[in-house]
Image (cartoon, rainbow, N blue to C red; front, side, top):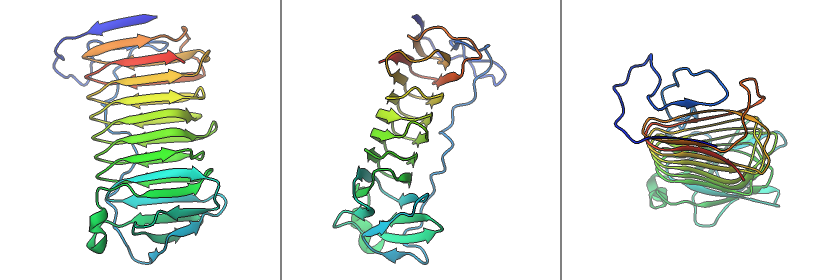
Length: 267
């Protein structure tokens, strides 16, 4: 186990130099990237757009994806039903793009009272889900398809979701990213102001967690394979409880922050 402590003011930023307390495991040291929000487009959605049709339930064709757009937040729960169903009391409009179905949860006109709320949407358990939210959180529970979840002002919370062979992308700007029981082959999780806390049921081949103001913590299953771990912070500590691995390891973790800790542990 290795620990580093660096509770001191950040040095002047020089793009060509790494942070003062950067610690690298398994790969040669080199300047870390600037810490943006994870690259996951979170659009300002146009509610009730042209061609959208009202309704509470729709099916998703095989190979299709559910795309949820909202100026507020949303709760999505996987079930054994065959259709996507929106809880009573929430306005909903649908549109189609090939096999994909877009569910718009309006936040304008008569639906303005729904702004900031988190309506419940039930989906078939294996659905691939994309969420583009804005001014509230995103919560996903028991959905086993690939996830692309993004908001701007709110938390992204995932419980018992994802799949062992999929890519899971979780992003916000002002809020935290928290996942428990997450299954994935690859994970990309990021924020600017908040923590990234990931607890996985699988050992992803690639996992990255980034923030600027907050901590990054990853808990893997017991007895994970060797990982090449690259962890950096300026004002915080770095804890790596994984076995040593070479730079050529097939499994890689990247943990980055400026003001906060980076930690990785086996379960």
